[in-house]
Image (tube, rainbow, N blue to C red; front, side, top):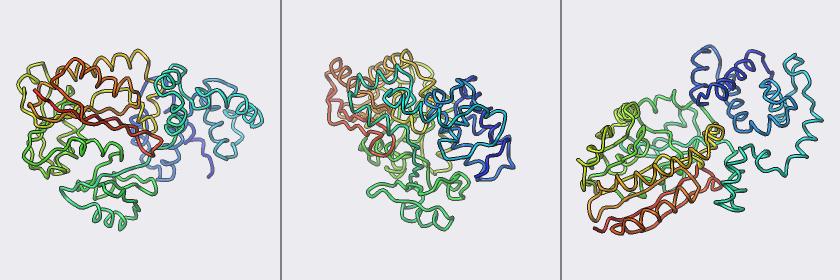
Amino acid sequence: MKIYKNLVDAIVKTLEEIFDKNRYADKAIEYLFKDQPKWGARDRRFVAETIYDVVRQYRLLNELSGNKNNWYHIVGVYLLLRGHDLPAWDEFAGIDKKHIQQKIAEIQNNRAVFQSIPDWMDELGFAELSFKWNKELEALNNQAAVVLRANTLKTSVQNLQSQLLKEGVDTEHIKGTDALILKERKNIFTSPLFKQGMFEIQDASSQHVAPFLQAEPGMCIIDACAGAGGKALHIAALTKNKSKLIALDIEEKKLTELQRRATRAGAKIESKLISSAKTIKDLNKTADRLLLDVPCSGLGVIKRNPDAKWKLSLERIDELKKIQQQILQDYTSMLKVGGLLVYATCSILPSENNKQVEHFLAKNTNFSFIEDKTIYPSEGFDGFYMCLMRREG
């Protein structure tokens, strides 16, 4: 593919916004594409993939560039490593392929640099996961698959797969689930089937959480950290809209997005803003099932959110652990005696997962452990943790 100056200029400008102005990569790319409506699908794919890959490999590329924090050199090194011939632009002057190859040989045993993560993150991951960290870190540097969840309120997974194929979208079904993996990356949001609410974008690992709750029609179910509602929508589908499903969150804009998605999906979900402790108190012992998909480091989903590596800090993770434990202590009052609770994160760190559960159970003897599950990125999709508990008294 020929490399065009206007595309590289746009890539560099967007990278500066992500790193220098602290914008989220997905939002920065979305803004860029709105500003360039005449770009075709091929140009958009090249720009988006280059930005995400450079963000993912930023530390390594910066080290190899020989001209640190020069975004044109960083992008140039990336393009060379992808097999492109660099145009003779002034911006690429001084990039030496032999120097890059020599530098790779020198740093390949430096895990943090070679896998392109901050030192503190590498130290934390190894401290908590030991040598398993090597395998997971390598997996987290892969590009995330695009996975759909068939909305069974409106269609079956088999029918959706057939209808998508008619649109030229080939998928692979994960047996025993409502998940379809795109065989080729496409802008699936333009599909009429998406606009009709036939499916949602949801990673295969994330699709394990709602079934783990063992929700049934007729129950009162509370998703207490609902966000934009991905798992609440799945619960609505699993219970065939025959449960009382309440979605809570502390951010009103997320609940607004949830209701927009619920309308499209045909899902019956009541949403409530957690404006004070009274919101939780008013729901005391009302839930047969309670989902706590708590705020976390997101280390399990770095392959789809690579800029999180550079925005996170050890201090922030420590803050999140306190929030997680506070949510466990405060929100579980909404569960009925005999009801089931799922604590979930998209982290792979034991300190955010089973260690939090152990701490909670030690202080709350009226809850019992049933089972837990960790899904690692090396298994092919996002990293997730979920633990099922019962309120005994």
